[in-house]
Image (cartoon, rainbow, N blue to C red; front, side, top):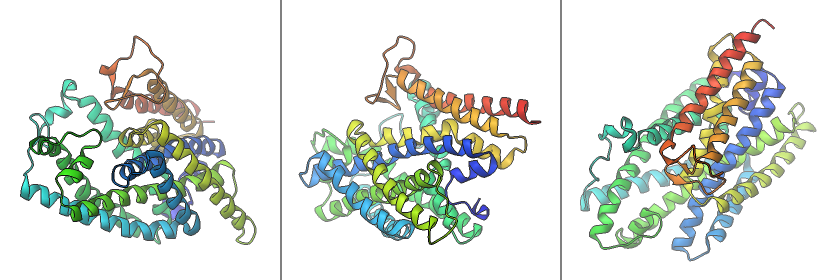
Length: 384
């Protein structure tokens, strides 16, 4: 894909299929990444509210403004260089916090939880459906992430892009696993310290247990993680809106190129406003991030993989998969009272059919419906 000379991920859907498929895929990606941006603004908003005394809305607005300014000003260069610094801060803060907790408290996890409690992946009563939905939405849905793909396309060679993916995977493990283990251990630590928490457990840990200097570094780490994702979301989504939805192509540097740049910066403002709106409506970081990649997993992943690896894929099959897979997921969303274990506070239509026990299965079912549509329609239309 790096060798194809693409600018954005929807470009692939146009080159492989057609303009209509590109347009529909772009609309879904913009909606998806509005949720992703909002999720990272939520984290920052709670952070400022808890430690700087601002309101939640003021914290969200402050982070959104800062990220918008440097992203719209410097584009991918600004995003890449600031991300390098932000990831370094996050990595150092994670390791120091993990070392402090292990040395002073150990890692005591509730029975039936932790990395070797495999019933969590087998027994629906232990949350297996929700856990598999989470793993697949984040692990596979993130393949159709426009910010990730923008970096792949911008790499100077396919080899560089490939190496960077492996380095990114290693970084995800080194940062994600320690935080997961600490999250499971934190309730016991707070209980021993007699600290009652109304809000994120990590904030209670930082306020009542962790030394001030280390706490400040961890706060910087959380903020860095939010910024490093929010800037990529704004950049990637604004590019898709200008280049793929509005159809402005970069054919000449002095005319259309300048027009595309100006329009992309305008769209960056639009997507930032959308992110702030969703952050206010659904102030739950985890749910917003999962929902963002859930949409891509439901309708966009199969046409991407099929377009790369299945010669009989057709534009009719791709469009059917995108529309039917995504529509199935959105229908499940509005009919489910819960999303990944949390209450659906965004848009829920009460009904007696789908209950909280069905949580997790919509994520697993929707891409299968899309796959069936993709294969079936492609086989029927392959000779056209």
